[in-house]
Image 1 (cartoon, rainbow, N blue to C red):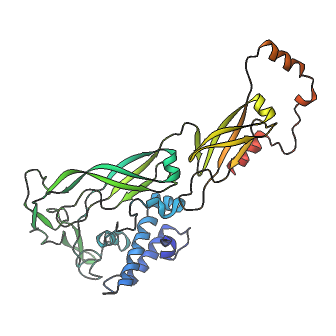
Image 2 (image 1 turned 180 degrees about the vertical axis):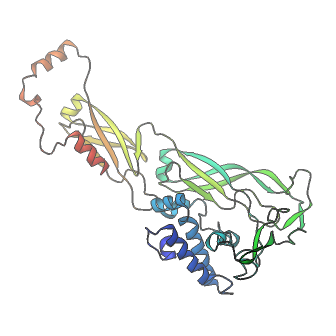
Image 3 (image 1 turned 30 degrees about the vertical axis):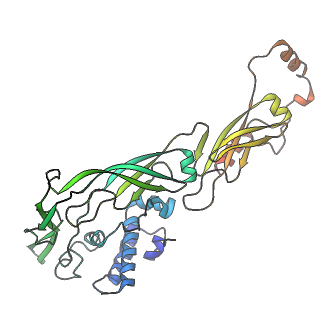
Length: 372
């Protein structure tokens, strides 16, 4: 199981943005590769801290993580399955350290003065529609994706503007002294390489569009609007860069008879008056197929029958929700003479007089219980 992001940074769940940034800065300084050469354990902690900061420093991602945990970012390989490279991590230091760490006065990798920038391809976004059964059981989807890949026969040469570093450095004089800043090379776009040769069907970056079938493993319990990530299945980057990611947005299809509320499901069961009086059994829908439910004699309209564990699995692995069956006694609107005469004769019968018991909750109490 992956470590909790708050525990990685040593902060509480209620930490402010400033506290998150401070905690990350402290860990980044402690475990930076330039301070711990050839120390794989320190490098791993450095990467974990960067991954935690990437999520917790973004309000939208932090909210999703707080609600769904690591599953909010797990697609095929998940967030931590190689999605961040060292270049992604070092790109954060402009925010954390103010962008002043370059070739002098800091670690070599902070601003890019001592570390070559690696270009990353653009991300792709698709929307996947799931049935309620897919959501409840988890599903593996095979999706056709058109993505840019490096065209066969394309060769590159070192960019003459940045000499392969992918960055250009500018030095300006200020009242505080000489300031050095680094930015992506305008010639190669940060790739460090420019086109040498390319086939006729390739674009200006040596890429061409290709259709590929991508397998996406969707865990049970996802919710409408959630976004999963498949690492490395976006567009390729020119040269020796790394591919972007495929972002999969979840869209939940409306079910014909079941309504979802969080991990719980609701089903409206209509019962005839004879069945309500005498009792019976009835077949109803669930996300795993049909089940037969017993109707006790004298059941009241509005009663809620709870089928435990027949709802949606929790995305965080906290068990399953329930299926709440709402009983609705159906009153006939038209009667023949014989039926009408029967009910006329029963008007004064004591068995037909309403006699609610203390256990029969009011409508508002039932609503309160349902949402508690």
